[in-house]
Length: 450
Image (tube, rainbow, N blue to C red):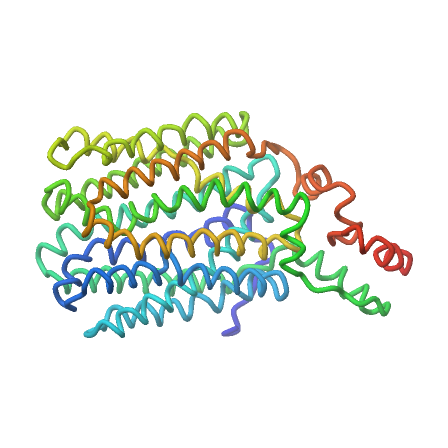
């Protein structure tokens, strides 16, 4: 593409950083709208239902859900590089729609396009990072993408304080426009990156078998919803989906909540939200340091348990809220580690042939659930108050904490192949395909052919 020469000697860290920057523009696209949500509501005359629909179809929720489901399948079939190169081009088109929007339909369409592309790209990039990372530093490499994810909100919210103050809605359009510039730079750098070595190896084995007349089976969702793989999917959805219901509320609605429930100014609301993500960056560095050295379930349990405690602040009546309580929530909520562990676990706990498809499916479940919840949050706030939503979210993050603390994985230092063999045993044949009880005979015939 464009005659750009691929750098086959690119270091693992450079690959990780370039691939992981999708997390910056993913998070940036979510919080860019959040930082100016009140202004967009006034400008476009959005009702609570329209705001809920926007939240439900954005890159934070439904749009990304569908993108991940489709992108995961394409990623396993055609490669990681194919997806993340093309997705960024359409991402830039979607952000341009938002920047130029003068009506609610165009604004919403831009969010849908951005969401679809973010979902597809995140699956491809996170899978690529795990496959290219050294086994002994996989948590460190996966965590670097999360630093980029947390950095996006910090930059956007801090930049929004002066821009919103000086330029109003134009300032928010400028925030969106900078994402186009960043995405363009990332896209060009990715053209130089090689394909995932692990995917290429599996793909070459398929081509060799096809040359011998062996029919290669397709990746099916029935495969990832069976046996050990199903247990892994359930664990990941419990950890990430339930936590993300609270996290997506924090990412998209929290400036609005700080203003309308906490009675803070727009500038202070943006500052506290940026502070929360700054703490998340610190937490991610802790994850990067500890994830390859200590028991991962214990690390998860300690830090994600703090996230459960933080939401009790919003369970209090609004008139009882004080400034120190809002600071307490802002800082302590930032210590939860579900997203960091989800990226690591969803990338290493599935066999290579199913890895992106399975991650795309769990990402779909997560963002689709967040879409439904995001649609309901404004309605709940308008009818019974945010306190009720907060109490429900305490339940979400508590179950998430339980799932990761007791059923998460601790596979430090193992290669992805070693994890697959240890986790799945006879469920996966020597070609890397799942073998169900009713397929043993067919699998044996296929193995005999080569």
